[in-house]
Image (cartoon, rainbow, N blue to C red; front, side):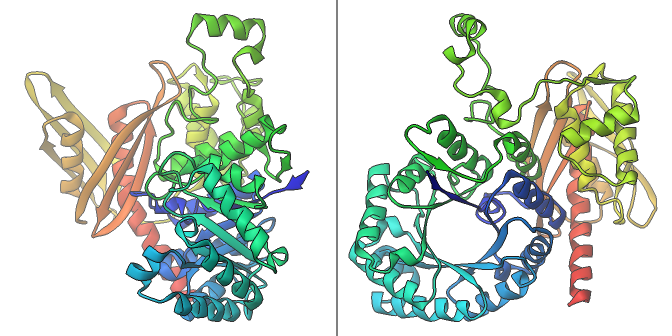
Length: 514
């Protein structure tokens, strides 16, 4: 059986999804979970793109010990130098450098001839290998490139020191047959191809990213790149959880192995969804709420008689466990600690006390606390920004009726410790609440997106609110959870504003360390 390396780009290509804005703490927590998931390589970001990205990549490189951390770079010496500064403390640093090879990109974007592109690729890969033990070179838009030119430039780039050659379907244009054929052609016509790993990187514009990735490994690729939940620019990337489970369930067609720990899929998916604010569609393969639900009477009857009649994947395979230990208001701290360890969280004693207190407060309102409820509480504490001066909600009240103008009254404590209070109206209760919060906050705020989601089922389910906004021109995301949808909305609004202060503190701290 052939072994496939998994290259996760959730923190780089995935974070390029419109509206996604992760802070450093969240990126590090996702990186830790990706390490538990078993990815071989994680692309932590694009260090040259911003100071914030540089600091996040460096923090991840310092943290991760069981995966190779890489960063993206354009074909410029300055990008390569910055990436090395960010990654050099990692246990297995590598660089991912890209340069377009398709006629349309070379002509209109790069404005360079094929000969100029070839020489630039040779020079930059050679330069990068002086610093990095591993250099991946990507032929951007490879699937729309001339195959003979692709063969020539790949041969020269390998001679220059590339250790991995990536052939991306950058715009999601290929069919599985075409994509597989490209790998066949490269393997047959590049004389030194045996010196490198061949990698596949597929986008999902036509819904074929996972299928194309599978076609690639059937035709010689031994590394596959993708993201958790398939997030990414435009329609996203190949969903790694779909690829991994596909290999397992259809091992008869795809006799390949990976280092992925499949039982970590659900937790990894939930963590990425929560931190990015990108809600998973109920009918999403592998991780959607309906992936193991059966509505049809015929299906229900079949599953009751034998699960495999309509269920080709068991929930346990991807980490969806039945609740052996049910937590409620009478549960003690020991049982609570055991449960959060089962869920994969590692807390300090102070964090454990804070989590247990929040859990007990929730049990006063809910008879049974589900894993989803706990996950929400625990991820909030895991990435809390309690050591930052911030706006804190003291009290709020919303008056609403079908015949009355919705009015919200809010009391806040400012970052300077001053208590402020005011009231505003709106066309609806949420707008009234947000108008009031905005009136109390001196920062300039522009809300760009807001959505609500239910955590669990039933009338006592937690509500989770996600907002996207700009604060003083800086894009930030915020989230909040509570049993009341308005309280969750207010928490999300303030969380987004407070993230600006957290990001500023991190940047100041890192700048002082330079």
